[in-house]
Amino acid sequence: MEKKVAIFPGSFDPVTRGHESIILRALPLFDKIIVAIGYNAEKQGFFPIEQRVEWLNKVFEDYPSIEVKTYTGLTVEFCRSNNVRYILRGLRTSADFEFERSIGQVNKQMYPELETVFLLTTPEHTALNSSIVRDIIRHKGDASPFVPDKVKF
Image (cartoon, rainbow, N blue to C red; front, side, top):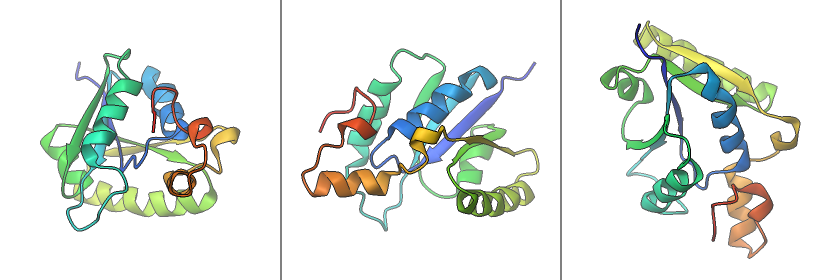
């Protein structure tokens, strides 16, 4: 039987407790989850991509079925070239759903074997996103309640 491999794509700039929650809650659904950091040469990240990889590797070091990779280009092409059939996405709001639904439908047209799987965020993570965390850090606030314990600034 073919292994069920999913990717959880994002910038993870930085990784949040919301990201961590979605990935850990999805573990029973898949044989392997690739946390895929999309790299855009046109866009300057707040944290260097190497730092994000290091944080994600630390956060998930005790989970052998979670792998961290970086990629450029279309997520659907990363999936095709890595024989991935599932994209994992977290939904916080109805606006997230509308946005992710559109992308998922286009991805399905481009790669018919690909399925997008949505998990709802837990209520305590609904308002959390990387932009808010970056803003807290930028203004010298304490971001520790919003990032995994193994992430230190």
